[in-house]
Image (cartoon, rainbow, N blue to C red):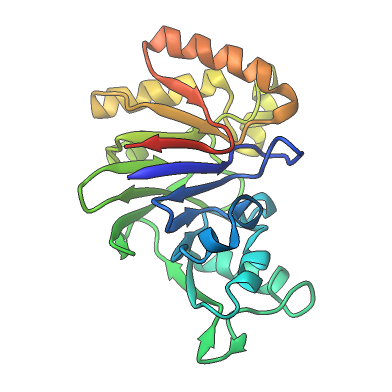
Length: 256
């Protein structure tokens, strides 16, 4: 399994892109920077897109991807039913952009919406995908994705502190999670359902207590204008836990 980080940030600039992950060139998790990161040829290899929640920085490029998939679809979009409803009502609504569930032809649309149930594993393009609720300020699911060779990742998406039951449900070879803000903004992070390095440390301690090990960790959704502070504090957490924690970046590739 190869993971490529298309976007690793919560804000966009010339050097920072919105959150999006690509697995083995075919399965995307979150679409913040999907089309802005991939060539048309690479986009044509995408077979499924998993969306974690409704926030714009995670769904934005569904619109432009739908246009690019106009004649090659359908590509399946997986998410909670409530999230698919938000996408159809507020994004692909024939006002901002076409409803690609019915275009170019009703019997051959560009996009097909596939609702998911939390805690129920499904097979998507040969991968076992387990959607699990995580703690954020809107309904959000993280995804454990397991390849046929049993290599797996767990991506929390945007999250705050979680109950230990989350870690009881996963056993990934790689953990991709978020660190949005440095520790000085911990109160704001908690109120908005995000992590700081100190909160990440607590999450990882819970993971190790429950699972008995710590996988390599990659962080995304960093705030780029204060990323240097986050980097220093994450490095301290890694040292204290004797853990491998790496800040993700655009174009980063990881073999699992």
